[in-house]
Length: 134
Image (tube, rainbow, N blue to C red; front, side, top):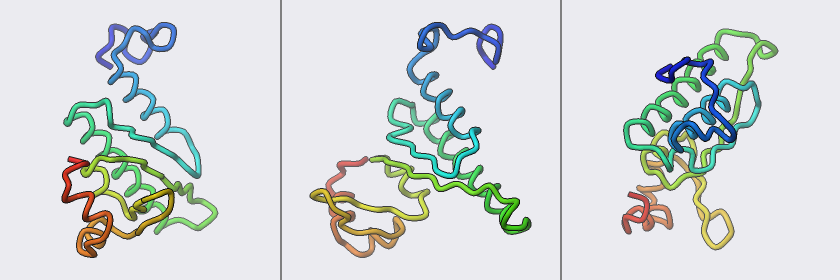
C-alpha cells in the first residue's frame, strides 16, 4: 500500500520497480493467499531484514492458527487445510515449526520439535552449538 498507486501500482517487467525484499514479500503474500494443499517455502525470509522476517513468520503462524481453529469447528469437507514445508537455516523460523526434519549426508538424520532435537543432543543440536544457523 505504500507504493504510489497502492495495490494497483504497476511493478514493471519482473517487478523491476521494487526492491528485492519487496518482491520477496509480495511473492510470499501471493503464495499465502493462494488456495493450495501444500506450500513449499525455500529460505523464504533469507533476503529480509529482521523485522520483515518476523512479520512474515508471524503471518504464517497466524494463518495456520486460523486454519486450525476453523478446522476444529467445521466439518471435514468444509476445511481447506494446508501443509507448509519451510526449508530454512533460520533458527527463528525453526522455533515456530511443528516438526523439524534435519538432513545429514543426504538422509534424514533426525526429526522432532525444536526443543526435542536440542534436548536429544544429536546432529541438530551439534549444528546449533556451532552457531552455523545464527
